[in-house]
Image (cartoon, rainbow, N blue to C red; front, side, top):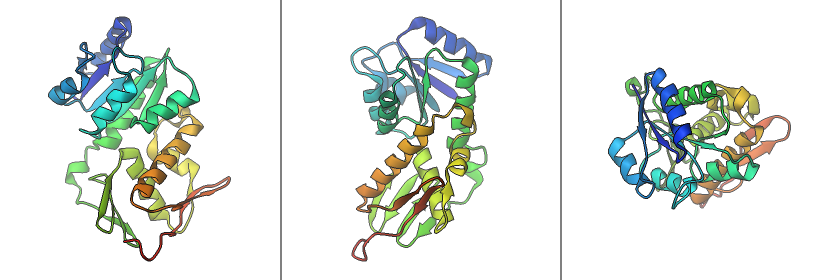
Amino acid sequence: MEKIMIVEDDAKIVEHLRNYLEKYNYVVTVVTDFDHVLEQFKKDQPKLVLLDINLPSYDGYYWCRQIRKESICPVIFISARTGDMDQIMALENGGDDFITKPFHPDIVIAKIRSHLRRAYGEYASQMQERVIQLENLRLYPERMELHFGNQLCTLTKKESDILEMLIERYPRVAGREDLLMKLWDDQAYVDENTLNVNITRVRKKLQELGISEAIETVRGAGYRVRVSWNEGEK
């Protein structure tokens, strides 16, 4: 069964999560040395990380950025912080989702299952590699890479899913509800602002490649790719 890493300094919450995860046959590994989170991550190679924000020494944002240098495995923040900016910071620093404390364990399990399906679908290894292309922009969903001419940037799973739908729908609009259904199976627990944050992250990745204003917001409907890059961009 999949291995889940818990990075949390509250022993009661750790025990609560561990018991519930093991009930569903997940293998659980717990970080106790908060100065060496990345080292344990590399050693244990978990399929998903549950990460608190308030940690000794360095906060969860820092450790998420370090994990992202090594892996694109799903990272779910679990925190008592409830502000919109905290959730935005979590996503901007590489997180895939955010759960606020106190939490219902069934929601945690539902989100874990959803992210594991998205990241490691059981048929993924049997699929031939796909290339989704629009003009000279090429998306490799299985690699989670975006190529623009000779340039390349890596994507998170959600960023890749968003771009896949936007490119496949071009020149039509990708509706907000359709995007939410593709990205999150459990829509009831998704804050409306979360999709906006992920779209912003995709725009930033495109800007890294020198492509600006490529995603148009269609008010009241959703988003649409606009082939706006210059002829000189390759």
